Length: 304
Ligand SMILES: Nc1ncnc2c1ncn2[C@@H]1O[C@H](COP(=O)(O)OP(=O)(O)O)[C@@H](O)[C@H]1O
Ligand SMILES: O=P(O)(O)OC[C@H]1O[C@](O)(COP(=O)(O)O)[C@@H](O)[C@@H]1O
Image (cartoon, rainbow, N blue to C red):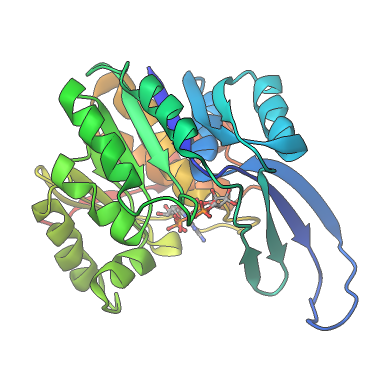
């Protein structure tokens, strides 16, 4: 079974404004609300690809109820822990540029963390666990590492998608997959990812530090898979970008949908890349037919 954990879910409020002017009253051309948060997006993409998962994490208030109901109406299984305070609203402003303002989200108390740990301790080596997104500021930096430590005892395959020290702390527990984007990779090592060569060099560092597989996503430049099987590039199809929020989560969802079925790393990578692009070209997250339509346009090249 695949489980996703989102510490800080959201309602993603996506507003399209023609020619946005800061400091003025602007009128939206259109606006939409979707449940958000990285683990939740992974679960929604898996569901769109007809793969079951259970969405876990912390929700609160009327916004939390909205998220839960939306997911359940789509047919997803959820197992959230209720916390005090309201689930955050993240604003995604689409104009000539894409601007995002993500809320801070409710605090998580020690007793709530314990509830999550109890659930995670039941997982086994047959399970995949995706921990994705930024945990609330009040939580310790090693919060994901604490989960990885528990999972490593039971051989759970863990996918971590977060940034900075929170990510680095997990590496010694050998996560199955991590997926920084190229900017996040640069921030980790305090360097600019100016070329594919540099990206590979630093991606390989993360492998040395313990990750079993590293995917570095690079938006319209596609993605790199760095693993013990070699280094591979997935090209990105060209298309009209409608909303790239969740493209990275879709890459993970598409990857896991395939990998959990046949354990073929390269085919999974191809599905992941196609899913990322399919989401970038959609208003909401990708649907199965969108992904299938792009698959032939994703070329996988072995670089090393
Ligand atoms: N503009 C785009 N054109 C084509 N494919 C894209 C585009 N943006 C994202 N993708 C696809 O989605 C994947 C993840 O996107 P990316 O923006 O790198 O992730 P994140 O959302 O984590 O920053 C990319 O590796 C690529 O395959
Ligand atoms: O947990 P964070 O880092 O604040 O990010 C949350 C946001 O990331 C998203 O999951 C999108 O992530 P990506 O665009 O990186 O795939 C949104 O749905 C959500 O608003």
